[in-house]
Length: 218
Image 1 (cartoon, helix red, strand yellow):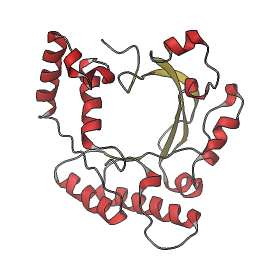
Image 2: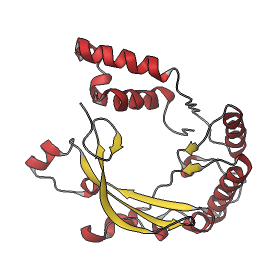
Image 3: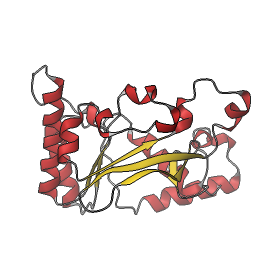
């Protein structure tokens, strides 16, 4: 479920991932070669058979519950919700801590009801930017209104693209910042297994908007 991105934007990302065609180029189809157009058409046809359901504009807790039940009835095996701060408050209270706790509790209850994994995206607060570069990775206390998240989540994974926090990019780095970048990640909580410290084991390709175990195919 996407609470802030339109459906077509997500579909474009999947096409970019499947074809290796950079996302900016997909948005200017006149610049595509015949081979790229063929790959794009093949990817679009293949996506029609995917068991992928994209719900946009869903931001009320009741809507999320109803859409989640519908997806499970269609044999969905995992539910992604993007993202916590976009979910509307379930009450008129002005205490943000209690409000966020209510939202997280409803998602946790939905997870139990549906019986499938529910992945909830959450933004870290700005204090991460104040950390020294060597230690700049979100911790549990950096999540907005983190108490309920830390308590109710089964697994908490944090990710960080260090290049985003470089405030003074030299000309060489500016030329390279669109290329694949190492991403730091950590598993801060795991009820089913190990806790993992910060690792540089995956890459992010800005042009393809995707994470990979290696360089994306172009």
